[in-house]
Image 1 (cartoon, rainbow, N blue to C red):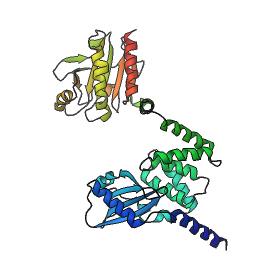
Image 2: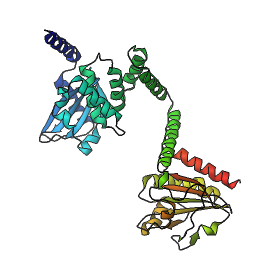
Image 3: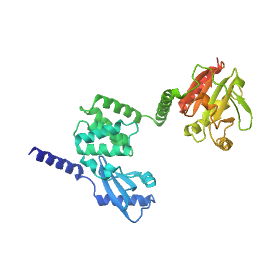
Image 4: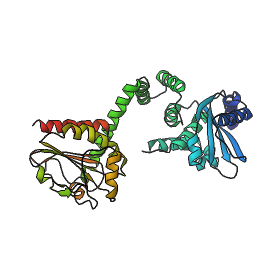
Length: 370
């Protein structure tokens, strides 16, 4: 009898959840029209699917002969379409997670489903799309479970797009919920502060966070650094692209910034304009400073082309066999080494972030003032 009652309430809950949902055929028609308006064409033989994911409904168009998604459009539970059209899936032909395709997700028990939510959320790089599906399934099936707040937090983090109205409502609900944990309330309060920031404040916060991340990563990778802070910097000699001789010993008594980079390294390339403007142009006329930029690229012939394309004035020393680099590090670029007037390494950094690079420039200035 107890089982029958439970099933009855489950059916009632399901009915209430879906009773107000818009007509399936209308959603598909609206989605097709939206694609036409955006001049996104679909092949003649397509299969349309309508899925409910907690507070969203989305319409997907699949190739009739393949599981790949050709396009996905999002609606709220009243049938109002959000402006986003997932064209990335059109380009990448991304497939729905297998557990969703097979319907096995709906067969998981409550606790197994919750374990899956926690397992996915705990990963350093979670499967965002799968976590979105799993949290949606939990929230739709168990809307009164006390753990729904944590599930909804993960759902908002990994939803395909951020609805500001829904998010602010969620912040308010969490704050007022007696069964939401203190830890979750604190986390959500921090998120609320972020969403109240101006674009300038948000950009500054992001820059600071990126710098902290790069610094932390630099500390973690410190064992790969061979030229240690406080030790004498290893001497080296090389030639610039124009054949000019360069050596560290030849710059004795100067503050020297040695930079290692490669043209195929995205953070390195991002750092180059800052090296040009904030270091080379600022200090090029000083007799007590030298910038030595060393490339570990294998294709030396491409370096002069790269230098001209990026508008770089400083010279580059090719090190294709990594003979110089090998004295300073085992792996990872970009790297910067500040060498003081006494020939000792003052700073050894790995990676690039704009505000972190500003700290490097500040240290150069500090060393020059000694």
